[in-house]
Length: 88
Image (cartoon, rainbow, N blue to C red; front, side):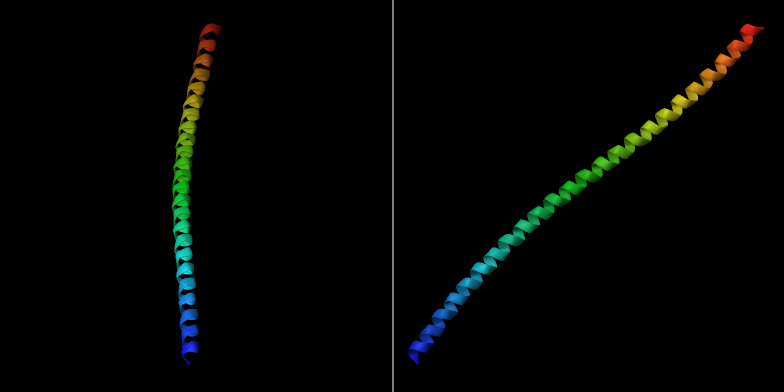
Protein backbone atom coordinates (compact mmCIF):
# COMPACT_ATOMS: atom_id res chain seq x y z
CA UNK A 1 0.00 0.00 0.00
CA UNK A 2 0.92 3.66 -0.17
CA UNK A 3 1.40 3.88 3.61
CA UNK A 4 3.80 0.94 3.58
CA UNK A 5 5.74 2.43 0.68
CA UNK A 6 5.90 5.74 2.53
CA UNK A 7 7.21 3.99 5.65
CA UNK A 8 9.86 2.16 3.60
CA UNK A 9 10.96 5.42 1.98
CA UNK A 10 11.12 7.14 5.39
CA UNK A 11 13.18 4.29 6.86
CA UNK A 12 15.44 4.30 3.79
CA UNK A 13 15.99 8.04 4.23
CA UNK A 14 16.81 7.55 7.92
CA UNK A 15 19.21 4.74 7.03
CA UNK A 16 20.91 6.91 4.43
CA UNK A 17 21.28 9.73 6.97
CA UNK A 18 22.75 7.32 9.51
CA UNK A 19 25.10 5.95 6.86
CA UNK A 20 26.19 9.45 5.83
CA UNK A 21 26.86 10.33 9.47
CA UNK A 22 28.87 7.14 9.96
CA UNK A 23 30.90 7.82 6.81
CA UNK A 24 31.63 11.37 8.01
CA UNK A 25 32.75 10.06 11.42
CA UNK A 26 34.93 7.46 9.70
CA UNK A 27 36.52 10.13 7.52
CA UNK A 28 37.20 12.26 10.60
CA UNK A 29 38.77 9.27 12.39
CA UNK A 30 40.92 8.53 9.33
CA UNK A 31 42.11 12.15 9.25
CA UNK A 32 43.02 11.96 12.94
CA UNK A 33 44.89 8.70 12.41
CA UNK A 34 46.76 10.25 9.48
CA UNK A 35 47.73 13.29 11.56
CA UNK A 36 48.91 11.05 14.41
CA UNK A 37 50.94 8.94 11.98
CA UNK A 38 52.59 12.08 10.60
CA UNK A 39 53.48 13.24 14.10
CA UNK A 40 54.86 9.82 14.92
CA UNK A 41 56.96 9.81 11.73
CA UNK A 42 58.36 13.23 12.66
CA UNK A 43 59.19 11.93 16.14
CA UNK A 44 60.97 8.89 14.74
CA UNK A 45 62.95 11.14 12.40
CA UNK A 46 64.04 13.32 15.32
CA UNK A 47 64.98 10.23 17.30
CA UNK A 48 67.09 8.94 14.41
CA UNK A 49 68.82 12.31 14.15
CA UNK A 50 69.55 12.21 17.88
CA UNK A 51 71.00 8.72 17.61
CA UNK A 52 73.22 9.80 14.70
CA UNK A 53 74.44 12.74 16.79
CA UNK A 54 75.23 10.44 19.72
CA UNK A 55 77.11 8.13 17.36
CA UNK A 56 79.15 11.05 16.00
CA UNK A 57 80.03 12.29 19.49
CA UNK A 58 80.96 8.76 20.57
CA UNK A 59 83.31 8.39 17.61
CA UNK A 60 84.88 11.77 18.36
CA UNK A 61 85.35 10.75 22.00
CA UNK A 62 87.07 7.52 20.98
CA UNK A 63 89.41 9.46 18.69
CA UNK A 64 90.18 11.96 21.47
CA UNK A 65 90.91 9.14 23.91
CA UNK A 66 93.25 7.52 21.39
CA UNK A 67 95.09 10.82 20.97
CA UNK A 68 95.36 11.20 24.75
CA UNK A 69 96.71 7.66 25.05
CA UNK A 70 99.30 8.37 22.35
CA UNK A 71 100.33 11.61 24.07
CA UNK A 72 100.64 9.77 27.40
CA UNK A 73 102.77 7.08 25.76
CA UNK A 74 105.07 9.70 24.24
CA UNK A 75 105.37 11.55 27.56
CA UNK A 76 106.20 8.28 29.28
CA UNK A 77 108.95 7.58 26.75
CA UNK A 78 110.33 11.10 27.13
CA UNK A 79 110.32 10.81 30.91
CA UNK A 80 112.29 7.55 30.67
CA UNK A 81 114.77 9.19 28.31
CA UNK A 82 115.13 12.16 30.63
CA UNK A 83 115.62 9.87 33.61
CA UNK A 84 118.34 7.93 31.78
CA UNK A 85 120.09 11.18 30.81
CA UNK A 86 120.06 12.48 34.35
CA UNK A 87 121.40 9.22 35.76
CA UNK A 88 124.49 9.33 33.60
